[in-house]
Each structure stands twice: as C-alpha cells, then as structure tokens.
Amino acid sequence: MNTKLVRFRSGEDVICDLINETDTEITIGNALVAVPQGQGQLGFAPWSPLAKEDIEFTVPRDYTVYMVEPNPSIVEQYEGIFSTLITPKKQLVL
Image 1 (cartoon, rainbow, N blue to C red):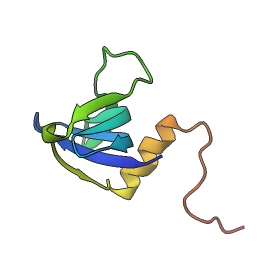
Image 2 (cartoon, rainbow, N blue to C red):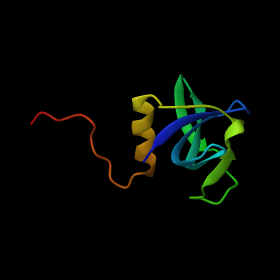
Image 3 (cartoon, one colour):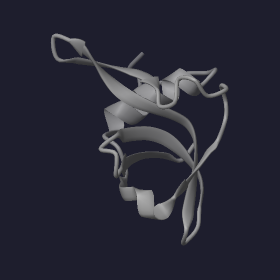
Image 4 (cartoon, rainbow, N blue to C red):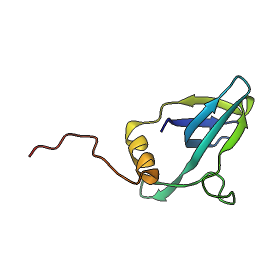
C-alpha cells in the first residue's frame, strides 16, 4: 500500500492509496477523509460516500494542491482499516 495524504483544491485532506500518477492525473483508492469525533478524536469516513465500494478515483493533477507522506500513526490506523492482517509495528519483549 502506498499511503498518501492528498490536499485538493476543495480544501479536503484525503488519506488514500496512491495507485498511479502521471503528469496530468492521479489515481487513488480507499480514499478516506478525517472526521472530528469530539474530545479531540478523529475518525475516518469515505471520501465519496455514495460511490461504489472499492472504486478507484482518477483526479486531474491540477485539482491537487499537494501530496505528502501522512503522520506514521495515521498511516497505521488507515492501513489497519483496509488490512485483513494487522501486524505490530513495534517489537514486543517476551
């Protein structure tokens, strides 16, 4: 999974799997937006809740403001949502 944080001209910050990028467009999957849950907590919701699940979105590059690596703790949460097997990131002491 190639997890990225993409900011669009609409002001949305989208956590997604970058599938492909060209000079003119990007293709993303598993696109989620952060939603305030109260008490300083964030949850995730589908970027396009009415779209069919597991769909890929192709977005014109000129609609993209920037694309960066997200905070590692956000990546761990995000990848946990879409992973069928969760592996610990830290080594456990036995």
